[in-house]
Length: 323
Ligand SMILES: Cc1cc2nc3c(=O)[nH]c(=O)nc-3n(C[C@H](O)[C@H](O)[C@H](O)COP(=O)(O)OP(=O)(O)OC[C@H]3O[C@@H](n4cnc5c(N)ncnc54)[C@H](O)[C@@H]3O)c2cc1C
Image 1 (cartoon, rainbow, N blue to C red):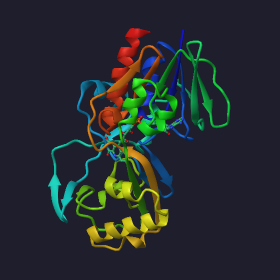
Image 2: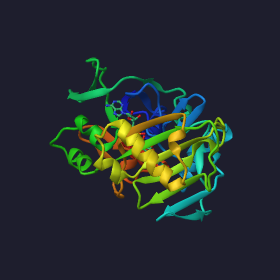
Image 3: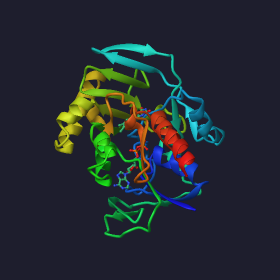
Image 4: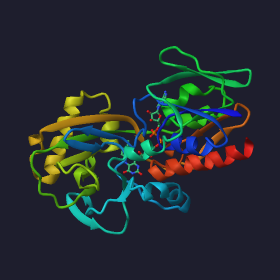
């Protein structure tokens, strides 16, 4: 039986694990204490925040089919909010797309996909060794894994470079894909703030998104907001003190909503060093048949939840024909 290691338990790693589990013995290594990666949810009682992916769309039948058990089990629901975009402080309302979310959190989708999968949490892989046609993984505690026939890397581009041989084409391709940063501000309030929308994309500002996280289905109803910085501002200020970033984004949000957000009783900011790609790429996935290594993730095409599924699904289809 083929022995496969997957680094990363975000949607692409878990999609691959679910599909390959039928074909071989799969082990997923995840550095965090929970799964889901950038489809992240934080429970800060009584507030509940999705501080990574905010929602997703479904464009292809294969994604819809993959998700159908989760629709049946009420893990995915439509977010029937009021959606808008704000340009130069002018609000335009949008009503042409269906927005889906995990319930009760975006990370519910990743959690659902762990059933029957061998996952090692709190296990950061720091290096890989290729010896006698096998892959061995070393973790941050200095332990070395058993030997694997195939290695699948699903980690954001520059974080994954350490796993590839610098002489290979995979290394130079991965290195060429830049990911941008983002700060996600989580604000919880005692009382509701009057809002003209549930979610808005913001353009030409240092913030790019404002949403009422508590307006999503199945959430705790305590009023809370999620505000994302723009990628540009985050890239320019990535090493800034977190409190400075928090206060700057609060003030930008206050200005836009014309209300004082500093009154929030819960204020936390999260720094994503590798949040998304701003440009579209055309790789979908990479497979090196000589070294038995595959790479997938949203960043090989475009930073969207569906793209991370598609990248993984396409990679698995080719791998299945090789195995
Ligand atoms: C702030 C933000 C907002 C977003 N908003 C949206 C949105 O509204 N709609 C949308 O469609 N998409 C959105 N996205 C993008 C979406 O979250 C991603 O496209 C998708 O979650 C990527 O999944 P993935 O599995 O490819 O990568 P990830 O989710 O990044 O998974 C990689 C996993 O690898 C783990 N890992 C990293 N290094 C190691 C290591 N050395 N050892 C072991 N494990 C490791 C990580 O902890 C992580 O769990 C957003 C992303 C961010 C950050």
